[in-house]
Amino acid sequence: MKVSDRTRGVEYAIRDITAHAQKYKAAGKEIIYLNIGDPVKFDFKTPAHIKQALVDAVLNDENYYADSEGLPELRQAIMEKESEKGLEISQDDVLVTNGVSEGLDMTLASIVDPNSEVLMPGPYYPPYSSYVKFYGGKPVEFRISEDGRPDLEDLRKKITPRSRAICIINPNNPTGEVFDRKSLQQLVDSATEHDLYIICDEIYDKIVFDSQFTGIGKVAKDAPVVLLNGFSKSYLMTGWRCGYICMNSNSKKLDEFRHDVPKLARVRIAANLPVQIAAVQALKGPQDHIPIMIEKLRKRRDYVVKRLDAIGFHCKLPRGAFYVFPKIELGTRWKDDQQFVLDLLDKTGVLTVHGSGFGATFGSGSFRIVYLPPEDVLEKAMDKLEKFVKS
Image 1 (cartoon, helix red, strand yellow):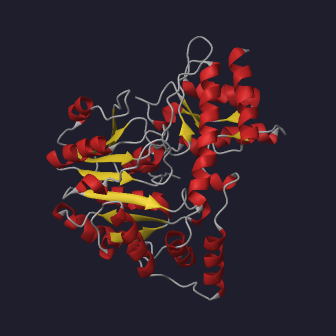
Image 2 (cartoon, rainbow, N blue to C red; image 1 turned 120 degrees about the vertical axis):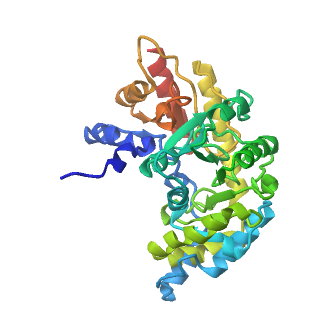
Image 3 (spheres, rainbow, N blue to C red; image 1 turned 90 degrees about the vertical axis):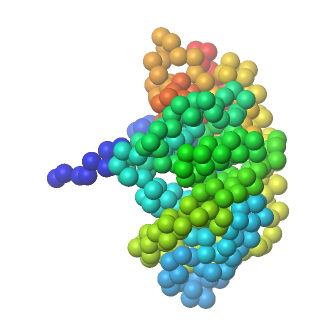
């Protein structure tokens, strides 16, 4: 039976690579998982008050459909959070989604037509390109300079009459790079100049190590900024799937988008109500788990980068999120990054992700490591990686 051509362009390297790991695991071999950015899989646990709020909601029979746009109390709490970060929004500019992925899907479904183009800094998070291709568009990578700033000359060269949006994630997955205020301003200015949407995913906004995080709302002014965010990472609610879309109130260019995107929220009925109730408590309740989480991650980041440098990998120090993206010395031993990652898995049981899965132009020749596991697991993985490379 025929399936739609749309699905052929859908790829998700982070989970696709797991299919190879299943064969390894079926042989009874141990796997060290450094491929998926799920802190709750390791020693970062959902705060007790958030879990209790979910349990209470279920026991109190708050198990019915929520408003399609989201629970009003949660939309209000989101508005307050994002307003503090600088974005001008009202409660009506907030849509609650089942994770950031659904928000991204709704956003790109609303703006991408066949043969339109979406610009994204390479390397990028795979679902951005997959959703663009799914709706008939073309992802276009632009360069990030060595200093971590967008290469504006490269960006401008790649803007065409078919360009529809600039799509970024800040802090970045897979590199951990954090755009500063100047970089964000340059991207917003470029989007405004060429009548492009700017879609900004800030899911890692609270996981920043060595610099002050600047939300895109600080430089948005009246630009058509669509902000994506959620509760998976900072609030350790990965499996609960709760995210949101925010639309810049000051942008009249978003009026049509603001009118149409809620239709998609209604078609899928609603986001999970008990989880939304818990998400209110996540925003309004104690935040003391966040600095503890960041300090643990800082130590793990520093250890992994130190080990990678000693092994001989060229590796930039990530400034946010929980990923590192070292370059591979390719040659006669490995023809490409995917072969390197599969060979590493086969010889050591260490599962990472090939860099080309994050964009062929600027991701190839690297691989992504998640440094979420405890130090003893990371030490074991680095020992195996070192032995593998030097054997």
